[in-house]
Length: 347
Ligand code: NAD
Image 1 (cartoon, protein in one colour):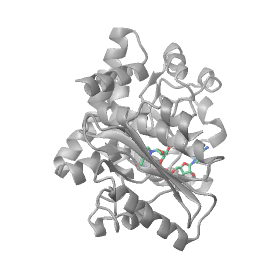
Image 2 (cartoon, rainbow, N blue to C red; image 1 turned 90 degrees about the vertical axis):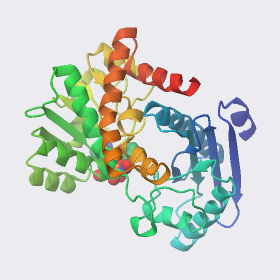
Image 3 (tube, helix red, strand yellow; image 1 turned 135 degrees about the horizontal axis):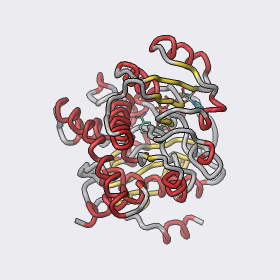
Image 4 (cartoon, protein in one colour; image 1 turned 90 degrees about the horizontal axis):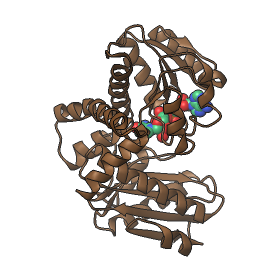
């Protein structure tokens, strides 16, 4: 089954390793090194089969190539999956991460990792005990720390650019923004929006978290079951992927969909469904790139805090260019983002 997947993949190479001690499979997928070393996080989860883990890593690695190119970071795309057989105790997890760090190190810098679903800054510190090719270690260990605040700032700039495109001004005062998921990214985004005068609505399956945040920033709470039918100017998905779909789009009552979640579209056709419904879609891999810009910029490219801030604001400019190209070429914003990324890859 691996053979078929690897043969049909359009990436450069795949490293697979079975970790006997933990029963986990390690998959490192290097999709492209055309623009520099392959960067992308490490996801840890249990899959129905190891092949599903490999397939996930391949798909995510391709998306990282696009993301790096779309926001013009001189890196290629890669992704790793640690497909674990089930929950691991702390010692087994740590030992797995140390061996995984050795595997990354053996690639000599062709792949550089960071956190992703179910891996943390503390995990990056452990990996960093075996290899320097890891981003987002804690600041105490010399890393750039939590990418969440920077992702949030990038989304904030992206929302402003989207509001400007739709309403002619990026003034957020009085604009309603519904933030779905107020975790690491969503909570900070909601705070920034509120500080800028937006009318902020929040929804989270953790109702208490949503209520406390809303009280603190003077916002409202929306039932998490009703997010995709609630009226607002901007819907900001910051929880799960796949919330924009053939089922949800007809019910949306917003003008803009712009948030941090990965894989917001259930399928590519949803980009056209959104356009046809008159909803401006900010391609997820562009608007949520602030964390990568900060970590890779600071740790690999030695960017100063000023350059990081400029590049975060540049996410808004990148989206504006995408919107203009989509209109000029009568394509969806998702297609426009991909075209811009591909033209950088072939330049
Ligand atoms: P997080 O786990 O800190 O927060 C997610 C929040 O969403 C939690 O509060 C959770 O209770 C809530 N949630 C889960 N299911 C929900 C639902 N059905 N309805 C409403 N709320 C729900 O995650 P995060 O780091 O804030 O990331 C949010 C999203 O952004 C994820 O999709 C992540 O992949 C993506 N992302 C994050 C970063 C980053 O730097 N953290 C970077 C790029 C993309």
